[in-house]
Length: 297
Image 1 (cartoon, one colour):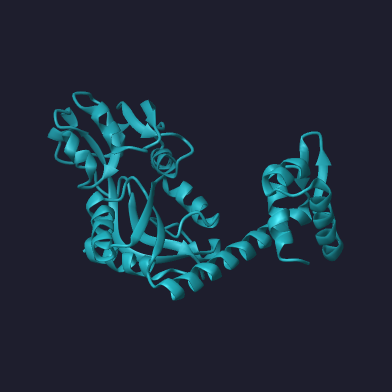
Image 2 (tube, one colour):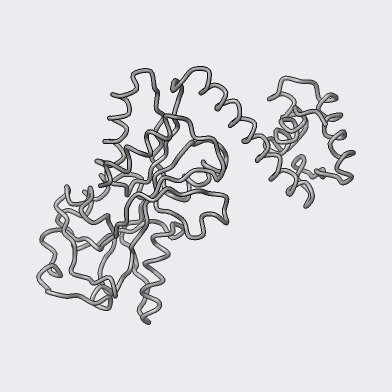
């Protein structure tokens, strides 16, 4: 097998057909067809099957593609490492971070890194944690600063712990429930909410907590993707409740934490610097990890 065949096989899977993949690669369709056949001959099994919409991976092809992607990422890591040896710390560092990470941690660390390394360049992506993990797996991020997933090692991820935090229920400073000394989850069952969409992990955690106590799930008046903390401005002067980082951006919009104990709603998290397990981390990535740890303290 030629090493370039891996790129060809991945392109066919990504584009769903020989014609589109050949155009994207800038090679002829017969050449790409021969490459696919060459790999299938060595594998001894068909990797793709033709459908009305193009080509889809077989069961064997799906397994092969998983390994092919890892090989491609390992090769790219090798090139990055050689570049780092040759040029020192020059290069681009691709960093993703969750919207719920305190700005003084991630932006403070990046600001210091830029001051220390005048030739360094950063590409920042602010995404939900699930999206960040997908980008890491695809090799589109070097590191992500986000809540650490459970059993990270089993998903091919490595986590450098930074700090523990907790998400809390917040309300406008004029909300009647703020006058109560202690609340139970049942006290929130009939309230209006501003919450993330149902497929987002945080929303699922909140819904599960209500179900476990035999309460109806919250019915949000507004559903958001939590892509921007500025959306908390929608709660000003209303009776809506929401979930936010304790001491985070929500407090800048006049919101306050409800006196709801962790025994009622446990949203504690472990925040860390996440990377692909075994991936090459450039000197820039290593230095940013140190700075993030310092700013977390």
